[in-house]
Each structure stands twice: as structure tokens, then as C-alpha cells.
Image (cartoon, rainbow, N blue to C red):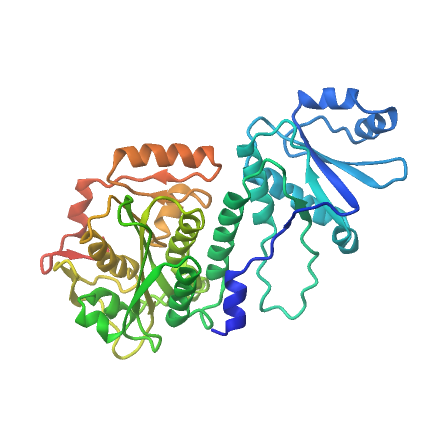
Length: 420
């Protein structure tokens, strides 16, 4: 990966600015109660404009108000009482659809924040920042309109917003990067650069060394690819703080191995390192905000490829934990690499362990496209995560870790199989 492209992956143009330009437009968010008071406070020409558009503060509605010289002065946005990050994302898109590139370039936007608290402003600005994301590094023709610039609201938490938006942009950049560019070495390099940025330490275990240090499943899944398997071990924070370990599945491309995927299911398998991307994204936020956490990040990285030395259906492998695993399907590789990493993480006795994985489309069948599944063996985590995710308009939903399922991964010739 070139230093230029690595820089593009890790640096994100900001859609925020400290001061207004000469021409500024105020974004005013009004619910159906507030809109009447606003209309009554305006002069007759503005009242007429609002009446003609029919704007009444209904959630998701927008209208543009102009002054006596026909210059855009205010954008009214309708909302319900539950502001979310998506509220200003839609405004960002509305602005790009409504105005020319030259107009956007010469204008700054502000938020009327008189009725908004810091939490609401943080959500709104996060939505603005996410809406500005684009992935066009490989396009010759970059004719997309420029990102509208939002003046930082006085009461917004800039550090928190910047950390959150940068984290999400990093995750998206990694998942969007094509697999011929983001190989195992390159994903490791990104992790090292993230660690360097926040003065974290990294240890890399690569290729045959995985065998020597007892990570047989990670090695076996990745051994058929010329892009060699590896494990990233990142640590950060004071040892006196609570210990959190994050594990992220890093299959940079998944052919399915000898159980080769049909073409339509292989097309987007560059996303199979999404777990590692999310692990790095969460680590970014934790380190950027200097949270009081002793952090460890483990990324098992491999390419599930096809060659004469590919592992086969019917093989029996031994995991780091010492359990024998019968391979029923080489396309169930994610759980193998993560098993070694989770066993390794457990040896360090963290207070909390989180793993991110793209494991199976069955979860999407169960919950649809918008709600990711999660599993936990801690009831308090299940309850708090489900509740907070709904409050943050980013819902996840628990599925059971039921002991009765154990019989589905039993096999007569090994401790367990990988395709229950």
C-alpha cells in the first residue's frame, strides 16, 4: 500500500469550520409546536414564504427561506422530539441537492442552537460529519459537489464528534478498499499506523510463526494464499485501568475456500474484514478520547483462498485451546480464526471481551438488513447494549447463546465441528 493511499485511508477531510464566511445560512430545527411561535415572530414576507411551502414542522420536512434580495437566509427543518444523527445527515443531502457547487463553496452553514443541548448538538454534528463521507480515491472523474461546511456550534463537544466521525470514516474506508489493495500486510500496516497515532504498542505474529506460537487455526485458514496470515496484538492504556480486549475478524477476502462460493455471494467478500475494521474503529474512539481503559486489540488476519495446500472439508484441526475441530465447510472460516484469537485473549483474563465478526448471512435472514445480531453471556451487557443502541438510533438485537445448541456442533470423530 502506498504512503499516499495509506494517508487517504487514515485522514478525513473535515466538513466543519471554526468561523462563518461572509455568506452564511442558518439551519433552524423546529418541531410542530415550535414552528407556530417561529412564524409569529417573522415579518409578513417570511410568513408568506412558509405558508406557500406548507412547512409545518413535520419530521423530515425542509424548506428554504430567502431575504428581500432573494438570497438564501435560513433553512427550516422539521423534527420530532427525538433528534438523531440522521436528522442533519438528511439536511446535508438536501443542501447538496438544492444548491450549485459554486454556491456551496462560497457559503457556510450554522445551527440555531438556542433550544438544543450538548447531547443533541453532538448527534446532529456527528450526522453531518458522516454524511460528508465519500470513497472516490479510485475515480478519475471527481465531479461530486463539495461538502457543505458547518460552523462548529458553540456548545458542541468537538473532540467527541471528531473522534466518532473519524472512527466511522476509517471503518468505511477499510471495508470499501478493494481486496487487491488491502491485503493481509496492508491491513496490518493500517493497524500499526493507528497504533502509532495514539502511541499504542503492537506485536505482529506472521506466517509460520503462527504455527510455532500455537495459532494453528489462523495459520491453516490463511496458508493457501500468497498473502500470508498474521495476528495483530495492539495494547494501550494504563495497567491500573479496567482491562478491555477487542477481537476483530480480519478475513481480507473470502472465496469460501474449497467450498467455493457462487459468484453472486463472492462479489462483495472484501467486506469480510469488517470485524477488524470495527475493532480498529472502536479502538480509535477509545484512544482519541483517552478513556480510562487498559485496551487490547487482537486482529486475526488471513485470506481464505484456494490452492493445492488449502484445508479441506473432512480435515481435523487442533485449536489453540487444544480442542479438535472437524471441518465440515471451509466457508465457515471466520469462526476458526476468531476461536484462536478469543482463546488467546482469554488467557489474559480481561474484565470485558468484545468480538466483531462478519460470520453468517443467517443473522440477516433473522433480523433483516438494518439490525445486526449480537450475542453475550452477560445479562447486564445484553440489557444495557440493547437499550443504549435503540436510544442512539443504531439498534442491535440479542440472539441466544443456548446450551441446547451445543449438540449441533458435536461430531463423533472430534471435539466439535465448524458447521453446526
